[in-house]
Length: 111
Length: 110
Image 1 (cartoon, rainbow over the protein chains, first blue to last red):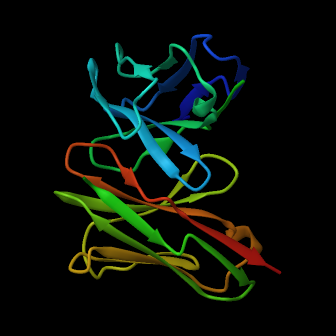
Image 2 (image 1 turned 30 degrees about the vertical axis):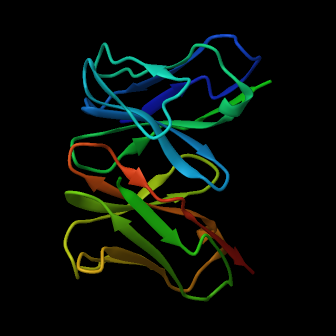
């Protein structure tokens, strides 16, 4: 089944404790993106990648890192999480120029 | 900077009503405009529009693009409570992934 998977789906952590949210797609898509969604602010892009080893900042990259060592994986790393990073995170992938397929979301709470 | 603006931000209607949601954009190198529906989980794809004036339909939902006015509308006829969701508009411009609007929250009450 074609899909984008994210793990974990829910995470509660404390300020400063490094964490990684994994994202994997099995559709051989070139593009992958990370978004955060907050009430009243919509979906905001954090980072995106147009191919292996190619990543770019989106609208709100501060406090996040990504890597794209393989086409299928695009992990999101929070080196030192803070409460303002409490949010709902979505990973998405797409073939070039077409609709994005979203993962199920990761709800992160930073205390 | 690329921008997508949706209106209204929020809408409450009764079952059976028809609604029109708006999306306007300012982007360089427009490629396509997409509509998504988001209920309590990830957004799901509805339509992709690339050409002006050609209506796309799926059941009670339809959408059309006006490239001259840099806008699109999403129509839902005979609304049902199951249509309650956030409707997201996004634009694909050139080599970067999608730029999203903030969404329209539609609530359909019985």
